[in-house]
Image (cartoon, rainbow, N blue to C red):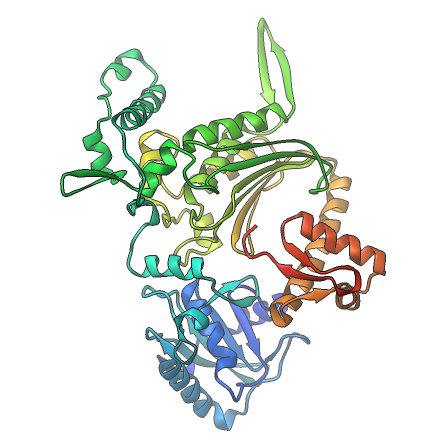
Length: 481
C-alpha cells in the first residue's frame, strides 16, 4: 500500500535508526537501484523473517540523510510498488511512505512479516530466490530453512509429523506414559494431590499428537522419537566447561542424548557441578546457595530444547565460562517473532507437541514467560542483566556471574571489539563468498599473526570453516553452529 503523504512521528525514530546503522530490521539505500533485484532480496528476506524497513535516501557509511529528488518521489514509490508486485511471490503488500528529514525527502518501504511463507523472487525460483534476514544482511535460505518456511506457511509443526519407519512398541509407550505421570506428580506438594493425578495413557498421547493412528496402526511422530530415544543424530545437548571467558581451553565436556527430558536433567546437573556452591549458617540451619540462580539455568536449558529447530543438523550447546553460563540453540526466533516481542512475553511455538508435553510435565509454565523469569531470577541475585540475541541462525542466552566492575568494563569493551571484528569478517564473506587471511588483515587493520589467531578462534567458536593450505587457505561461514 502506498501512502501519498508524510508519515507522522517518523522523523525522530528514523534519525535514531540512522545513528544505529543497518540492522536485522533496517536497510539503507542512497538511491533506488536501477535493478530491482538489488532490493527485492531484502523485501523477501524481511517478509520471511520478522519484517523490516528499506529506507531510500540514506548514506549508511556516513550516517547522513542525502535524500531523493522530491520531483520524482512519487515515481520512485510507484516503481517500488510495481517491482515488488511483479517480482515477488506470494504477493507482498508493502507500506510505502515518504518523509522529510532535515529538509530532505526519504522513501520508507515497510515490509511486514508474511503468513504465506516462503516468499521468493519469481525470476530466481523458490530454491534460489528465497532469502532470510540474518543480522544486517539478506542471506539465501538453504533447503532446511526453506522447508521450515513452508511448514510455517501451512501451519504445520515438524514435531507432529509422522516419523517414517520408527517402530512403536507397547513397552516404550508405557515408559513414556509413566515418565510423564511421574513428572506431573512430582510438581505437586501433597500426597493427596499426587493420588488424584490420573495415569497418562496411550489415548492421551494420541490426543496430544505424540502418536497418530492410521488404518488401525499406531504411528510415531517426530516428537515421540525425540521423547523416547536418540533416533535423531543432532537431538542432543553438548556441555562444556572452559578456562577463561572464551572457547579456547576445555576443562570438561560431556554430550547427552536420549529422551529430551533426561537430556535436560543431565545438562542441568552438569552446570551445577561446575558453578560455585557456598554455605551460610543461619542459627542452627545451614543454607546452601549457588552463585547463579538455578531456576534461571534450568529455564535456559528447557527453552533451548523446547524451541530449537530440530531440522538443523547441530546441537544445543551449554557452555560454562569464568564469567557466565551460555546456552545456544539452533534456529532463529520462530514465525517472525522479534526479540523485543519475546522480551515482552509474546511467544510463537515452533515445536507444538514438545511444548504441550513439557507443559504437562510442568517443565514449562505459561508459554512466553521463560525470558521474563530468567530476567527476574538474575535481578533477585543482583546479577548483570542477561543477554538474549541471535547469532546467525542460532539463538543465545548469556547469564553472567557477579564480577569486579572494572574487570567487567574492560571485558565488555574487549567483547564489543571482538564482535565488531567478527561482524566485519562475516559481512565480507556474505558479499564475496569467502575470505583469505590477507583480505581479513586489510579489513581489520591487524598484524598478520594476530589476524591468523583471530580467524582460527572464529573457527574454534564454530562460526567459520576453513579450506586450503597456507596462502591458499580461505574461510567460509558455517550457517549452523
